[in-house]
Length: 295
Ligand code: GRG
Image 1 (cartoon, protein in one colour):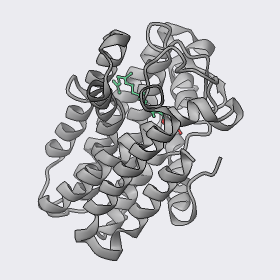
Image 2 (cartoon, rainbow, N blue to C red; image 1 turned 180 degrees about the horizontal axis):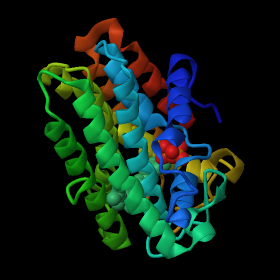
Image 3 (cartoon, protein in one colour; image 1 turned 45 degrees about the vertical axis):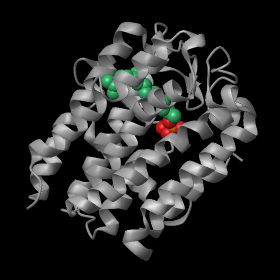
C-alpha cells in the first residue's frame, strides 16, 4: 500500500523524528507506563493527522518549531484513541501497526494509564506550543478548548460510544455517518483547525479548512472500511476482517457504493478548498492519497 508521497511524506518524517523527544524518558518512573506510551506512539503509523496540521499551517505561511510540537500533540491524541479502541472492552484487537496491541504487550491496566498519560501530555504540549506561537487572533485557551471539544462526548468519545452501544438493526447511513464523523472526522477537523490557528489564519479560512477536513476524515474512514475487507494484514498492520462483526459503510453500501460515497466526500473536500486557490495544493494531495487508498 502506498504511503504519503512527496512534500507530505517529508512532513510525516519531521513528525516521526520529533515524537520521541516529546515523551518522558522510558527509564524514568513509572517505567512501564513510559515504555507503553512510547510503544503506542511509535511503529509504522501514517501520521496523517499531524501532517494535516503541518500542511494547513504551512499554506497559511507558518512552519515554526512550535507548530511541529502542536502537530505531535495531535498524534498523541490519536495514539491514545487507538490504545483505548483496541482494548478488550472495546474492539478487542490483537494487532495494530503490524505488532501486538499495547494491552497485549503491557497488560490492560498499564495500557489504559499510558493512553491517559498520552492524552494529558498532548494537552500540556498543545498549551505550551500555543503559548510559544504568541498569536494575535487566538489564545492558548482557544486552542485547548478546541482540542478538548473534539475529544469529548460531542467528539471522538461520542462517536465511539454510539459505535459500541448501537444495535446492528439501528445502524442506518445516518447513524453510521454520526459515528464516524465523530470517531474519525472530529480529530481530522481539530488537526486542520489547530494548523490554521497556529498560523493566525482568519476565522473564515478556519471554516474553509474545517469543512475540507470533515469530508476528508469521513472519506478516510470509508477507505479504512474498504481496506478492512480488501487488504492483507501485512498491508494494514491490523488483523484481517477486524470489522467483520460490525456494520460498516462497506456492509451498508457494498464495495462500489462505499467507493462512490468516498469519492463524493472527497469532491466536497476539494470544492471547499476553492477559495484558497493553488496554495491549497498540499491538501489536494492529501485528498488524492485518501482516494487511492480505497482503490
Ligand atoms: C480519549 C482520545 C480519546 C478517545 C476515546 C476510543 C475512542 C474514544 C475513540 C476511538 C477513535 C478511533 C480509534 C477511530 C478510528 C479512526 C481510524 C480510521 C484509525 C486508523 O487511523 P490510521 O489509519 O492509523 O491513521 P495509523 O496507525 O496509520 O496512525
